[in-house]
Image 1 (cartoon, rainbow, N blue to C red):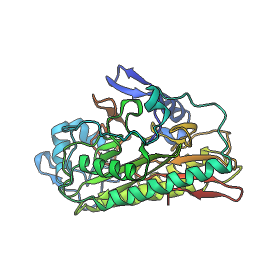
Image 2 (image 1 turned 90 degrees about the vertical axis):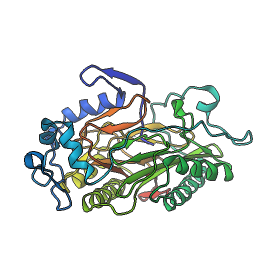
Image 3 (image 1 turned 135 degrees about the vertical axis):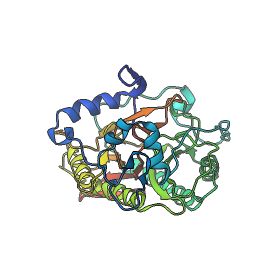
Image 4 (image 1 turned 180 degrees about the horizontal axis):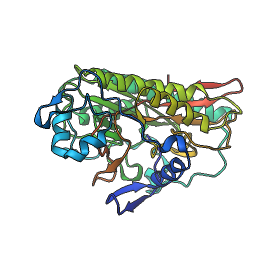
Length: 362
């Protein structure tokens, strides 16, 4: 689950944005490489020409050109490929048995403030994290097996909740800053933090399932994007590139390497394939706290902080096929792309070792 902070209002978009938006904008503006508008990989042969005004995604590599013609034409473009997601009915909060250990934020209603020094885990903490991460990965695989046409995201949430409870774990997203469900499900134009609801998955959808569990005092966090039915070539490419971007970020991790090398590797992988990185959502340290230091920025920037053995954090870039601008819906959580382009995300929790990096969520 991507790191976010308190919510602010920006008049120019009239939507709620987290402080990561401010951080991302500031650091992105300082990087000439990232300031440049990256081309959109929407010129594959699966995109259908809109007969009205002969506008086509094949000829338009910049989604802003489509937006200038009006939302109706944009919707006509994307409807031929995938369904634009709108929030549906959200069921009541699932029950958690009394014997399940809860995170501090569930007990107190407030999230602990992350300490400024990056925590270094001892062996007991590392062992606890490995168990939590292994469980999260197993639950994610089973949730992925349930993905098919007609299944609702609420049903996926119920499955994740049940599997967590059966393994004596608490589903970390539940009631984190008021989030009403046990898992995040983000479909098509939903960039992240989608709330499971009554919408059934449709042929051609792509869905990110983000699972985090709290087991014996430690969180484990991971996510994958899955294909639903027959997904067009552009959607398949987006998912493949998103997976590659996460792996590129993880591959540079080792002691003594600057954290900014993660963002550099991810940006290079995304931009070379013609895709964009949404910079406002970051990875995060994790352990006894759901979110802690360091913040892992997924775009090219400059930072002198370096990795050290016994650090644990997530790498979870959100890659989109259009422009990275987004807005937060009225539920205060769901982030959707402004140009209605699709996004995909993959996530691992990693441990920095003396020799390099260990992926805990395989």
